[in-house]
Length: 367
Figure 1: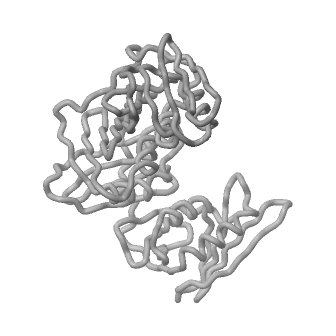
Figure 2: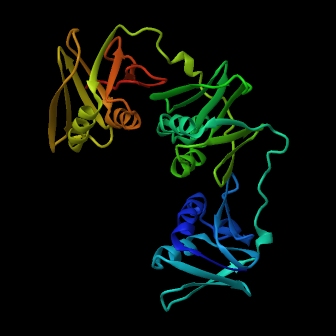
Figure 3: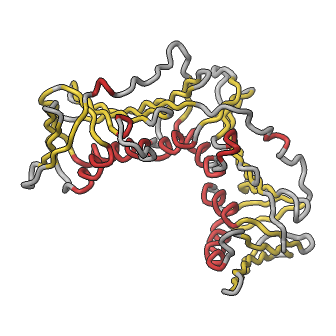
């Protein structure tokens, strides 16, 4: 195998490939990245067995062939080499990497490509299409709320379903819930809820643009996703996702609205003196204003006041600042509205004016 290509074109794909396999400790074929040069294209594959990644980049093929290389070192070499055209020459269980404009070369051991695992295929499963921008928006509004508690594995992914004329994504860790829905064409068949690992979803947000469509196919245990030159698949998380509809309040008596950027900036400053274990910040809402405060034992405290639109009685609540900050960063509206009934019951954060998503948070104890 022998080919030439632009360094940065290859590097951005190898970064993603290495992210998939980086969690592997043992050096094995699964620590390698698959390369195949043919028809002036380089096919790149990586897998951690559960998630499979495949893409294609343009190269000048001088000799067709395939091999696998240790991903971590391959990425390190590409990152260190100056920008420009590179030559790759693989033979005799090694690959030689040389830039055209510098007197340097690297030799990296390669392994036969026939040892690399075969990727699953969707078979006869039907693909359906969604606007890639809508799909990215759904991921960005939910993926941060996924639980990292492995004992509650059924919350370690994003719940995804098609119901009536809407596709829905939901994520929760038991203390917060993120929900978004999009109206879709009637040509997409309803499908039962599945739980998608966040790893594959994060790849989509990093690599997908805002134009075009994403193709999705779902089988009993696997989701297949295609967009641009990328083909991804992932084993689904098994288990029963919580009944999220029971958590969504039907009515909340009170509400206040606030500038999203003002609140984010205030949170950033106040969180400098927050207890690291609890991450508790205090919100005090009164007519026309909101105070955000924190206190770190034996070190200090912080307080900031911003304006808000509210006409009710004074109320105080405590929240995990990260649980407020993450949905605020994901939102795009300039203004948000917070709905509540009592200070110790769930609050709902929505964009103002209302859109197709919302976030539910469980307050903490004040003391």
